[in-house]
Amino acid sequence: MPTIAALIKQATENESGYVTVEQKDGKTVYKWSFDAERYLIDFADDYHEHGLIQYDTNQDAPYFGVWISPSKMLSLTYCEGDWSLVICDNPISFNSEVDSIVEGYEEAPGFVSVDNEEKTITEHYQQKAELYLITIPHQQLSLDYPSKRVFYEISAHDYWEMLGCVPPIVQSPDGFMSSEPTINNGEEDVYFTCLEKENRYWAILATLSEWVKLPELLNKQLSELPQ
Image 1: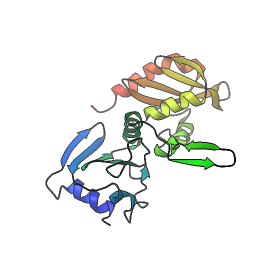
Image 2 (image 1 turned 30 degrees about the horizontal axis):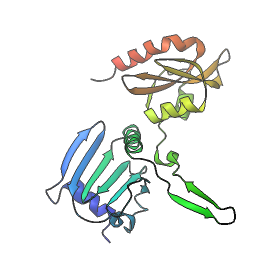
Image 3 (image 1 turned 90 degrees about the vertical axis):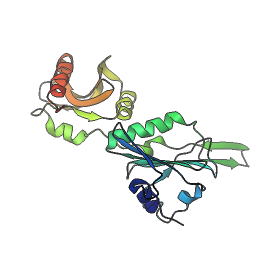
């Protein structure tokens, strides 16, 4: 069985001369045609070495499959002879790739169990958390506070995940502040805080009294970044 490493090498080095390459949003997308079956990937000798996770869709068949590798930050899709390999530059672009896959394919159960005694059928769905990388630098945020007031970019997935996990103590169109304090600075509680600006997401630790000043602080930081 050909290895996944060989397949990736052939695609990225364009050894066949028939691979198209596109750069977009922190991702490199390789597309080519090669008639096979999905089992070329499923039964490859180095399947586990590449950390691949099959993404379960309602289209799964010998001629169709989607795989995601958090450890390699890539996705691979096969559909009726057409291949697409997406290699991401960083965890944020990888999480956005996973988001596009989750949004693009109808969810399907990974397997079904039957209880003959109870006469029940249970569908078991994939745990989406295993597909994503954590982009929130919790430890670094704690080390920074209060001497270093720096926002760190996080993925849209982690932004919405945090908003859904802990009710905000304050929220606006710019972002939110989680209601569970992370630390206390001796005078005030300090909260995990996220802001959104132009479809990018940023995290910092801050007190409630700092909330109204945070958009200005983020704008200042972004203005000082290299163009």
